[in-house]
Image (cartoon, rainbow, N blue to C red; front, side):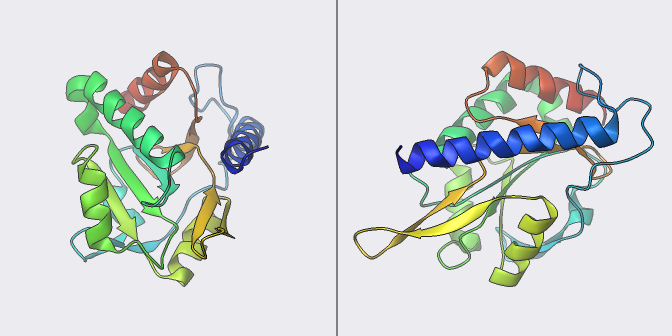
Length: 201
């Protein structure tokens, strides 16, 4: 099985686990919204990162609007550009509702991705997607909070790539976990989830 397939499989398994956790803890209805359950999924939380302008960004900067947040790296050969390309298409399809959501791309590659790298990368997809960088300790903290899998993998040329979760996390306006957009999920399904998320704002 190829590295790409393994990465996608890992992301799919994690998405399934997250869905099970969400159903178990949030009483999610088939429509994907929290029902009458009193609990909340233990995904997400406080973080401190650096934005594309070099300024400090925390979870508080995203509160008040729901957020679609994705974890990857700019050297990613396939999953990240594919996901951000799809996300930019979804943002366009949302029309005016697109501005009711935040969009964030967190790099798990603290060695190579700085704020300027992320600014160039995300702007090639949609200016509304905010690139976020961090130190090793900061990335460890946020990936642990979001239960994101990532692993540095050496390549034959002496460089490295990173296997990582391929799902987009959907958070409500208070920073609570709502669900995911899975890698390879149908466009219409993802668009419907984002529309529902936008109505929560």
